[in-house]
Length: 208
Image (cartoon, rainbow, N blue to C red; front, side, top):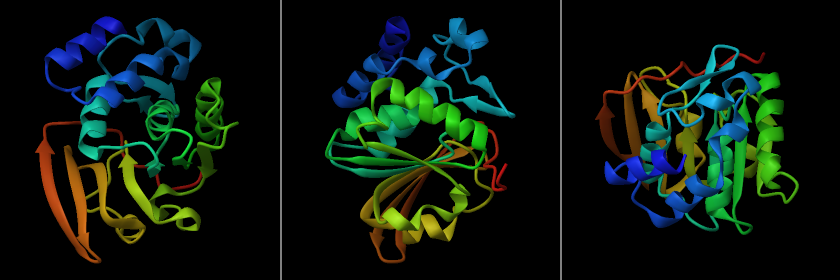
């Protein structure tokens, strides 16, 4: 993984020191099924079952750099899957922060929760996993400083995410083969930036 992290830094995908440190500490293989662990260092998405994937490291690095999470942030992680992004975010926000991981597939919610707690984040109440439809966000702990979604929404992001985001908050999410960054400027005004050329599994919105 060290070689992969070095490559991501040299190519400009990883830039921020605390995001780089999180990548070094949180091992991708800890979030993969036993038969896939030997492929953890590959810079590509890999299956975690249920037609879902653990995201490509390059894409995770890029989205975290767009999101700009920091210590003390409250972050909503939609489609938490294997728990890798949840653990990375938990390491970044630290004990004064909070990550709410929402997963609509029960088996993956349990898988991701167990993986993330290998680092003590669930036990220490930094990460909280919720079995729910991520399109609804998670109103109980809103508003959020940041929202990350690692699966593709269709055409437009859910209004619930916009409503549950703080002013100056940021959303990083895929829409139609692009990664989009939304920055909330006022109550209903967002600055939007598109980064095309990516591919993601679709956002599942039915409880399974």
